[in-house]
Image (cartoon, rainbow, N blue to C red; front, top):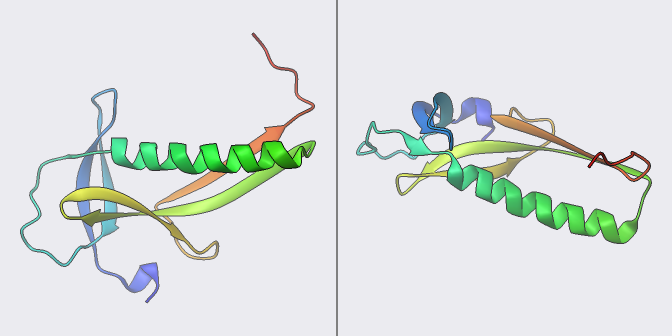
Amino acid sequence: MSFEEQPTERISMELANGHIVQADVVASGRSDVAFDSKEFKEVTETLGGIIDELSATIHKAMPTKATVKFGIELGLESGQLTAAFVKGNGKADLEISLEWDRTAKVIS
């Protein structure tokens, strides 16, 4: 089943700075999901771990330039916001593009 075919529900998410954003997430199928806002921190911590792993692997390969693109689908699991990889050609709630350039000058 593709993302387009999966039922979604709109939820509120609280960012670290206190701002609230809305997002459509893959519905959990549970009808008892509260209407309170969910913390986006779970997603950012997951992304941080993914980025750390990718960065370490790219650093070992030592290319002069590397770009990584991937999509993240937001969902609810046990009332918590979760992130899952999606196919590159599928619809993603978040498309992440990371680029490393070893020739760029770092500004201190």
